[in-house]
Image 1: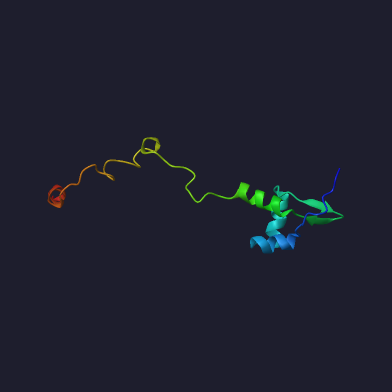
Image 2 (image 1 turned 135 degrees about the horizontal axis):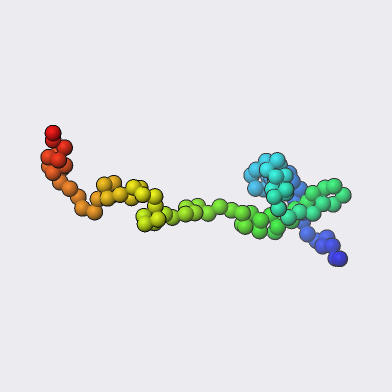
Length: 98
């Protein structure tokens, strides 16, 4: 196995500073799959691995689920909430008189 010595590795502290999180967060990421190497008890992270991992785990700013009215629970998209045509205010007030 060939060891690449020309690579620059990051420490946990370097990684945290680079990304803007705490060292505790980076340690948590290591347990959830952030690629790293352990050299004599020291943990090192390749910048390319960090970038790939972040891109893989980033959240989209778009909503994950879009609900179509036909699949919504009963009454959520009722005609009363979303009338197809506007009703003049006179007719509404006439309908409310007792």
